[in-house]
Structures are given as structure tokens and as C-alpha cells.
Length: 473
Image (cartoon, rainbow, N blue to C red; front, side):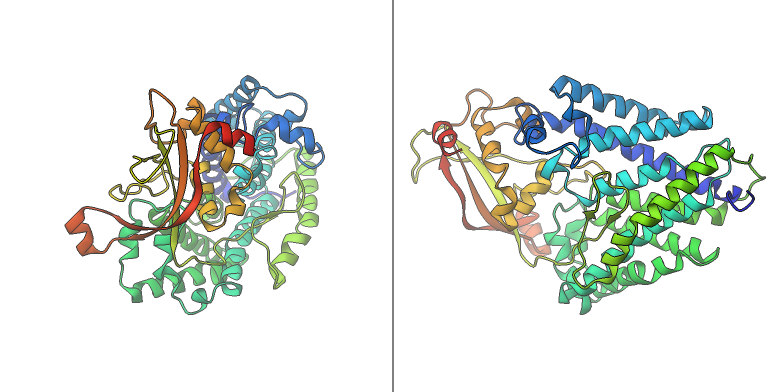
């Protein structure tokens, strides 16, 4: 079928697939490094307990049939190695059917992890990775010209990511409409980056220009994705620029990089031109058309969500995460609150007790420490700590298990932190307090060397020891 494939999409497909495989690799590495403390057999939210109460149909995963920490590690290592091979070009060096199998296996491997990850895997970029990974199965490889239907489905994903985020902002916080949200956002975002302090101190007129540019990128450019080239390509290129700005200003795991990969699939035809590639086999065309019909049918719910005033962010409508709704920061917090977790060697605490703070890798802690860049790597505990500071309800299922493991000097849990202030003997008591954090001014930075100023707000968890905590649970 002449209409089925277009050789000029070859560069867009190549860039998208290689970036997607690299992001799969990062996702599997993050799972390997964090799973034991978060969802392992002795984790805060153990997988065996989850699969015992949740049906396979609600969360399809291989771990419903068997789970052990060793099996999970082997599963994740398999995903990491396969993703690395595909990123290096292995899927283009094998027959078409084998390439499809590679992408399908990556999708199944990561789906099994996400569907038992519980609150640690409840972020929109997990569904975005799975939805993009599903479409990658039907993109073909170097043996065939890229199928036009799937390339347009990638634009449909990109449209929902950007337009959904734009709509939820305009429907949400008034600061998006009066262009003042970035007076606060660089300071109060979940995990600031090393340049966030500097972005925060840009002149307010420039902050308003940033918001206006964001609205243009999320509400106008996505519509142009469905126009002929080169307009669609330049619209996608504009989205890439916007996403790179977000990469510089914060840490949003692989959300920005995956959005860039999607945009590059539409922008790359601006710079690609090559001789025709071989025609697709009939069986491949049948599979692509079937997958396209399925996606179109499943798109009803996300499309309706875009049109409703009760728009939902980051929602999956079926357990395979094939077609989802996206969005971010419909509401902007004006004040940054952080939970500071501290331990002491004193069995009885009082006014003279010496408390030592546990420092996290990404979330703000010590006021003199400049935030670091971690994205596209995802620090799951650090992100959930930000949500917990907004409301204790976000931490109800995991915070006490976290504290219990600190009181035990649990090795896997401590690996999620910057260090262990009690390397010899576990602390006798642990407490948690909420502080208000704000970026220092230029003058305060020069005088104190501190990037943050903080003041105590209230107690989050009173001093607790191991035995009382176990009784409390």
C-alpha cells in the first residue's frame, strides 16, 4: 500500500526509538536500585502483600504468579540489558518480526513493574513510557519505511501530553491566567535543579513571558501538529525548545525527555530525505492497522476528558496503559514545605537532645546544599516526600514503614538517602518536622552561602522508638 509508509519519516523514527530505548534503560536501572526498599519482600509496600489483595485483571503483572527479590532483580536486569541493546541499534540489525518482539518484550517487562509499583509508580510519565512503548512495537525497523499511521499516533500522544497540560492550567490555578505562576513555581516545584535558584530570581516580567510562552507551546503548537509539513515539524521543534527549558529549570524524571522524543518524531522530517525504503510485508500492515483501530477506540475516554471541565490529570483508563490522559501543575503551591527527618541516640528525648537530620539525594535538606540534577533518573522517595509535605494523606501507607526501617538501620532504605548519620548503632528515636523553605536572596547567598532559608512550621511525627512504632502499626 503506497499510503501506508513514508520513507521521509525514517529519521523521526530512528531518533524516537533510540531515545525511547535509552529511557527504558534508565527506568529499569531506577527500578533495580530502589525496589528492595520500596516494594521488595521487606519493602515499605511489599509486592507480595499487594498481589495478595489485588486481582491480576486489575494489575496485569508476572509478579502475580511468582515474586522474590531475586526474581524481580533478574526481571529488571533483563529489561535493562535489552533496552541497552535496542538503544545501540540491535532492533535494526534483526528481521522485522524479531524487532517487534524486542519492543514488545520491553513493554511487557516494564508493564509488570508499573502495575505492582503502587504509589511509587503512580506518576504520569510511567503511563507515558508504556503508551509510547506500545506504539514503538508497530514502528518497524530499518527494513521497512515507517508506517504513517503509527507516526501520526505518536503525534496524537504528543498532542494529549501538551494540550492536556495546557488546558488543565487554564482551567485550574488563576496564576496561570494572570501569568504569575512562575513567581512561585521554580521555588516550590517538587524537586528543584541546580539552576532553579537562578530561574527563580529572573525579573518578574520575564516570568510572565515564560508563562505566556508556555501557553503558546501547550495550547497553540499542538494543534499545528496535524497540519502539513513543514508547519507540523516547526511546531514540534518549538515544543522541543520548551521542553529543554524545563529540563534546565527542574527535575521531572523522564517526562521532558520522552516528550522531546515524541516531538522529534514529528520534527525530524524537516531535515530528512532519503531514497524509498522497502515495502512492508502484508502481515505487518495488518498488525499496524489493527493496533491503530484499537488506539482510536481507546482514545474516546482521553478525548472526552480533554473536553470536560472536570478534566483529570495523568489517568489510565485500562490496566495496560495503552491510551492515557496527561497533565501537570493545574495548581501551583505558593509556599514550599519540606519534611525534615531526624534521629537521635538518646532513648529519652528532651530540650537538650541532639538531633541529626537524614539527608536525601534530591529533595532540599541542608540549606547550604545546591540542588543537583537527577532527571531523567527518578528519585521516587524524594518525590513522595514532597507530596507528603503537602498532606499527610499522601504518606499514610508508607511513611511509618519508612521510619521503622530507619530505626532498624535497614541497608536498602539507607541506600535511598545521601548517607547514614548513625553508621554504628541505629538511632533510638526518629522524628519528623515540617519546615517552610524559600530560596535565599542574592544578598543572603553572598552573606551566608546558603541557597535556602528555612523556618519550622509544625511537627509531622513526634519522636518515636522502634517498639512503640511496631505496636502502633
